[in-house]
Image 1 (tube, rainbow, N blue to C red):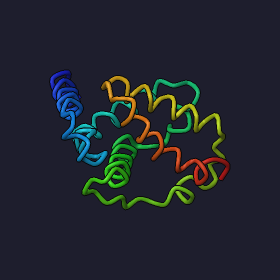
Image 2: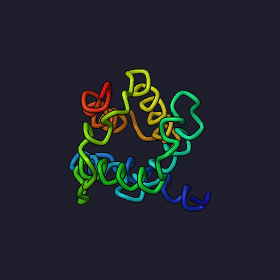
Image 3: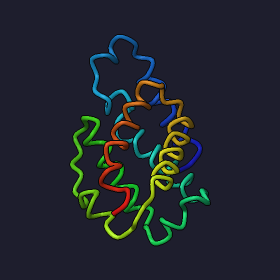
Length: 142
């Protein structure tokens, strides 16, 4: 993603966040800035995960475009957007990986870093992290 498109996405996030009272009527998907903003955050997350020595080996065989599109669709649907996640359920997708709680927490840390880069407010960040945390039981230890 170019600097210009990152700035555009950051602007979309800022515009959405500054809506004030009108934002209270919007779902999480809309408050985050829709699919373009989710895509920017997920692209940043991939960059952060790729550099994270704690977990980057876990993603060595993962195609960035698959990771990105599936995570964007999951977040889009889970946050009230129009997308439909069509990937495997989390338990089957992570079966045999034997991911640890430390692995999961490292990804959570990386997600927070990606959200912070785009200055996602605490409330929305908490909601996104809640969506991801709900997957922990299906991801860790399988």
